[in-house]
Length: 421
Image (cartoon, helix red, strand yellow):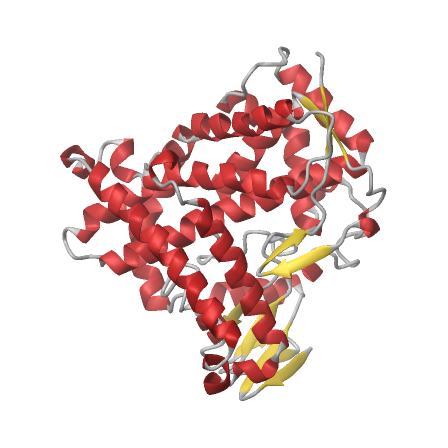
């Protein structure tokens, strides 16, 4: 499938072999991502290859397993804040639960990436509101194609709202970086400590040798915190929706949790999390049907030969992840929610690029382990203590979705019932 948008050629493919070749060989992102430069410029996810290589090399140490494992207690701490909220509101319908979850995942990311205690940034949630507003405006601009013409766009009221959202967002993250600088200690220069490799401390250290600028640090920090917090919140919300619709699957998750965590108030350890095989499959199946990032685009610097097709140099290559994950040639009954698709024997039958919720190859999502660990810890903490219901949703067809950069369900009202054992 192909088409033109102005002078840009866009070609879509969902053949796993093509996807692997594109994601392996086309490391430059599509110029489409330049749309977001006014909010976050030259960030890891969207920058040109030369900038990406430099930043990825600097950032990689902050995502090693030892560092991520040290975050587990923080994941559980903020998960229990959600439990506290649910205890206080048990029996009533929760309106817009995703915002409650997002507030906690934002605080989690603030502490894990920036080593900044959330209460220090009192206006921090304004960054979430500004980001949501920004996403809404970006999507509106694409639907109203005349706003893609620069002089029309910059004379519109929407542009003024867009600029206000960007200014609010940037001001808050400027403050976050300043607070991280205040907390930076001389011992943070020691490469042997976990603290020295925490994301923002690690970048501050490199800024002192001019390997990265203050502006680049702010851009990468704002992206990491917002991307990690939003995708985690949306994934947790979507998994809870799936379990509300499928009580039999929820019961299997609960029985597994009881076997691993016999006491209802028991907090999951890292070892406990590693034993939650069925919950892991539930999360993966949720991400198959509803990947938080449903599409990715690459730029072909040279002709890409994907027999029998040749994708020409200069084209924008679209990988519709959400459709790739529902290819009936790969996934029998693709609209069916079946966690057992991710049993090891089933996974072994499929092409490795038939399932890519975190992309693939050198430019995959650097935070994929962070995301899975935080989502699992949060769900385990909540679901051991509560049964979730979705009174207004009886099947997947009942869910309404919105796509504001991130794919998320519009509906987020749940009924939570406290477990007694």
